[in-house]
Amino acid sequence: MARPRPTATRRTLPLEAAWPWEDDAGVDAEDPRIDASFNKGSVVLGSEDGQSFWLLLTTGPRRGEVWMIADVGAVPVPGDQAWGFKEWVQHWHAGGGWWD
Image (cartoon, rainbow, N blue to C red):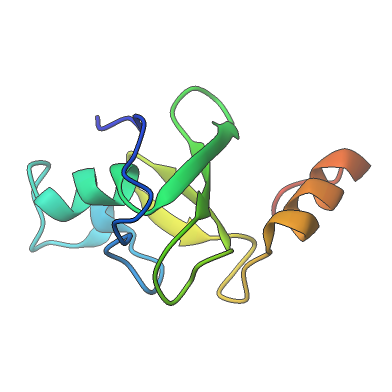
């Protein structure tokens, strides 16, 4: 499984919408878009369970949004109208569930 590593934050995340690649029959584990989704155009905010990571997008049309990425895909949080960093921090600080 790909894991986030220090990224080139000027490069753009290759996604503009949620992509559950585990459900995409045309994708295999070596698809370069998967590695790029973990490692381009974002800053890692933290890990949810060691396999899921919170990313703040730093480039591209979805810049400023928080996404969740895991071995199964990448999604804006909590849905297509993703939180910005401030909303994500406020929700985390309030102790709310991530998908409320």
